[in-house]
Length: 121
Image (cartoon, rainbow, N blue to C red; front, side, top):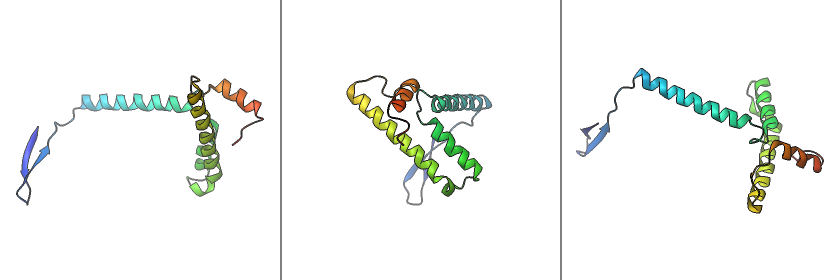
């Protein structure tokens, strides 16, 4: 539904009018948003998908401890960035080599880290 409005320049401009949202549509939107957030949260907390959960948790705990003063947590942030960079490079290499899945599972990652003597980041 549109309505024509004339601007000072004399040219018409279309203004879109939408129907007022009903409580049913708001409830449905909230449910979809909540479901999407839950799905993303599960994805981030899944050890097979996210290899840097430990580093992410460390960063979050540091922020909580220092009242979100980011300057106090730069070492944690750097550790997280290094972790993401390391596993991203592994994922890219596996994709080039045709290995599936691109991201090694949590068990495979543990074996890889044990073989090189710990975390390289």
